[in-house]
Length: 358
Image (tube, rainbow, N blue to C red):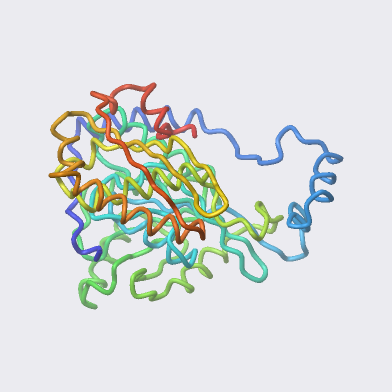
């Protein structure tokens, strides 16, 4: 689906900015350094590499080799997940024209000669309307001081507003290198692109900038090279054959939720959460069971549809993606349940895996 169907983001008022700012400050104070080897001795690390040939060179520092983390941040629907998929070379992050499509941090590993990039797709920073929205903001803000490069994405087709300015203030204060990424250039004329670049530079200073179109694969490789230039020398953080840090259960839940968003559009998207209840690989098929949660009985009826037609279509759409991801035939069962008020229930938010600390 074309990105030009995405709605214009809401403009934050002063009261909302103050509220989110307080949450952001709290989030910064709680940031912890990411260390995948924490608690392991040198002997344990050596033994780990000896046990698995796929880990050969993992953790070793090759002369001149660079590695690091790159966070994709911006307003909702700025094109973060689409750019992540383009950089990775296939779809790992879900997309839709609905704000808050991305709810989980998704890491995708890109290996090139001489360097390893770990891209982090974050939820769009937005005006929170509930506890879930607050957690999504915290999740995005966590990444700013925990990565080597922050790629600040701005939509080339939409006027820059106070929301973009608020995000820019957070990016500006991060210790990381900053790269401006103007997205959706295929939908804007040259004059519009130049005007957006000018407006973006009025927000803050950047270490570099680039204009891209993920759907047209325009400047995607150049973007990768641009951010790789700022990576420090260091070891591979992940084995070369590792593509994403998302679990199979997370991928199932996210791709089912994407199909709900695409099929129902503006009717119920923000009220939908999905949990993968079971995965069982048999000789011929991967059996999957997932439950779709909504907040009201009327929403449940919309997802099920007349005679079960809507839930059937959602299942068919999701199964196709899951078979591509897992490389096997998938038998997918879906249930729909009502969980009233789950977006304001901290325990339920954590159960769905949307809390900032995960």
